[in-house]
Length: 312
Image (cartoon, rainbow, N blue to C red; front, side):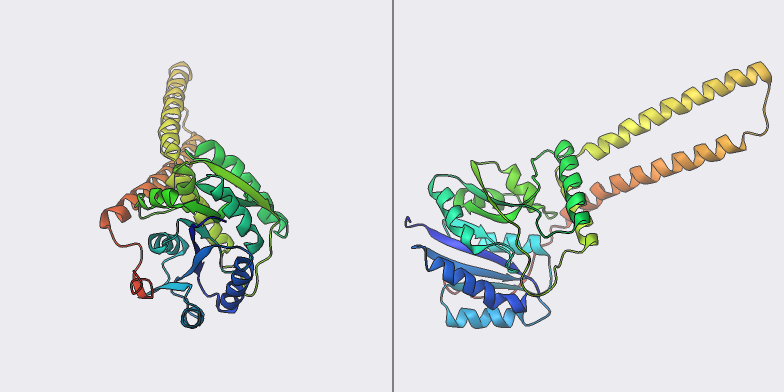
């Protein structure tokens, strides 16, 4: 191995049962690899004793660093904080739930030594429910056609970023962050390593279907303006059809006179146009809401405690 210094970034939220386990797994694997490193936990305002266990690890192991938020700001904020505080020549992002196998670390580092600025771990869908696998497949197949970046099924946060790639991500300061899209947007030479999906360790997944849907919408809106274009084109098409309908009805009135019934056509038109307008307003509202959030310029997170500044 070279003399590079590696930062292992581990966002953690209510992972009390896994903190010790992920640290032991990392120590065991890193014992086989001759490299300098730090293990940086970012406590995302956990409600259990996750921070207490991280704090104890930091006391017992000088290589353990931590940043703790005042409340739960979300994984995207935790990733940003970790990238800002990581001091390594390369940063390896891993989840605290043991779903990212430590045996791949050597492959990630090998890719970095080969000159790649991003080394991405891609998993299969073994162990996922059929419904979740099906929805994920459909989502990625569809989103790849509409967004301005390339998103691949199975590629997530588990990856290595060189210092150049980290600095590039940190230049992107938007409030509504979608890391998968940001990692793709910055480009750089990339290598992919494959692994079989691992079931999480202790505890339950923090990703409910509702959160996954919201995360999926974030991905669509953050790197795509096509929904707004759809509203424009849809409005033009509907306006054309409405004018055509008015012309046809006018011709019929001239030919046969005024037909009083017309109730069904009127109600149908009102309901259809009303639905189109509400959907269009909802799409526009998603973008306007993000503009509003960006104009407030609030910090992405607030730090309660950290042992990083003391060492800098």
